[in-house]
Amino acid sequence: MKDKFFTGKNAELTIEGKTYPLPIIEGTEGERAIDIRDLRKDTGYITLDSGYMNTGSCASGITYLEGSQGILNYRGYAIEELAENCSFVEVAYLLLHGYLPTYDELRHFSYLLGRFALIHEDMIHFFDHFPPNAAPMAILSSMVNSLSNFYPEMTENPLEDIDIIATRLISKVRTIAAFTYKKSMGWPLVYPRHDLTYCANFLNMMFDSPVKPYEINPDVVSALNKILILHADHEQNCSTSAVRLVGSARVNLYASISAGISALWGPLHGGANQAVVAMLEDIYASDGDYEKYIKKAKDPNDPFRLVGFGHRVYKSHDPRSRIIKKACDEVLVTLKVSDPLLDIAKELEEVALNDEYFLERGLYPNVDFYSGIIYRAIGIPSNMFTVMFALGRLPGWIAHWKEMWDDPNWRISRPRQVYVGPEHRPFIPMEDRVEEDHEEPDIY
Ligand code: CMC
Image (cartoon, rainbow, N blue to C red):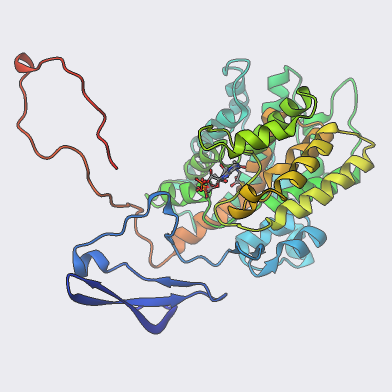
């Protein structure tokens, strides 16, 4: 079957003297790909691409990302314009539906987000049974998976009710995130309020207390909106690919998102925002000796990496990090907070951006480099940083799950491999087995 985006041109692959045509397809922004879907059928060969460095797993109409120029568009709109002009809820609507909502559509969406904000009271008992220092990302992933038991209609025909299910999930994850924090502190839960906007409601659930009512600061609300927008989608990153891969087995949305949350937890992915602040604190504790960290990051024999730097796709500036850096400055001024970590971060950036090692490899600050400093200023503890990332990424994950479910080319995701283990050998009965040094197979 010819792909809808087939250019009419073919690439040619010659194997053992025989030439095979491979269709060239082109996306709407000129991105080109060689369609190898029939390669194995036609030639008996598969492709090998560890880490998916060069593999497109799907065609997607949600986010366009161009790494060499630092372009990021959601549904065609530049991230800079969305971050400047929209609320997070508006952008969530855009990602889910493909177009910017009218005033009435946005009002209805916001109303539903308010209506679905409670979680079943039985779920609240779950929080009591995690150990006191349980990782918030583990709690979030478990709680989101559990939602499938409380809202089982999801297993019927998900696309029929997807708007309700998506809205419910976006609303409830916010409540679960805030409750996770309150429970970790041993403080009374603050329930969601219908009269507050999405971000204000979250901040209120996080910081309101019976002994000290929380005063909602519109500048903080605006900064949170911005930061969540910047995280809302990033095409086929590790967690989104996890959501799509798990969902491709036709599992429900909650279980798929729970898998995405687990993937995001990793320090090379969303967990980097927490690791950045830990690194900046270490540098601060060592009297600002950031040169030592730059040296360690450049040492090929040291596994240390400068967290918050580098990206698989961006080999120039990450457009999100520029916006976050500016927002960071603004928030600190508004809240009259002076954070020495911000000065260290800026110095570190300056040094790295003038260093051959980082320039040659295209290593620039990524979205995680400054986000933790904003969270700190707002009062969010560092073990909640990656939960904040998850809150932002949720509409993107749902949009991808929905797109994958609806894709006429959908197949269960099932990569192949090149087997490099032992060749077939005879079975050894227990009585004949001898203890010997078993070496791990050397795969390369
Ligand atoms: N510090 C020092 N060297 C680095 C770094 C870094 N942060 N990142 C990459 N390199 C080097 C790496 O050692 C390699 O050098 P060489 O060619 O000499 O072997 C070269 O740059 C290419 O690196 P890579 O590992 O092949 O790149 P990748 O695309 O597989 O990894 C990355 C991308 C984001 C995992 C990596 O840059 C990294 O580990 N960064 C630090 C963690 C981080 O900030 N993660 C957040 C990413 S953005 C938000 C998100 O996705 O969640």
